[in-house]
Length: 120
Image 1 (spheres, rainbow, N blue to C red):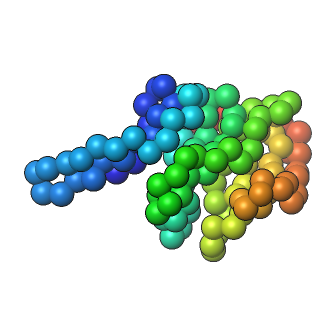
Image 2: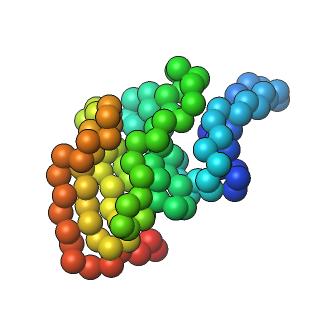
């Protein structure tokens, strides 16, 4: 079980029967608004309230790596493009949809919806 705290800490709970073990995986120092696993569960996207997107690879137990940083408009949401885990799509509050290459954070494509986006 992965979850985040208000302080920007990513936790992992390993639960077996009636026992559990808690581990701190990463501390990004910014409140995390959403966690999204890729379809094969090898990469976890962390989206902060400020609009920054990080990747975390559970098998490597390393730090979260900053992938995308909010520029003119905060990222409202991000998710993986399937099949696979090489690309993600994000949307900003201003309505810009972008496709990203996860390996190095290269923006591959943009589409402006010309409308403000909200989460419901």
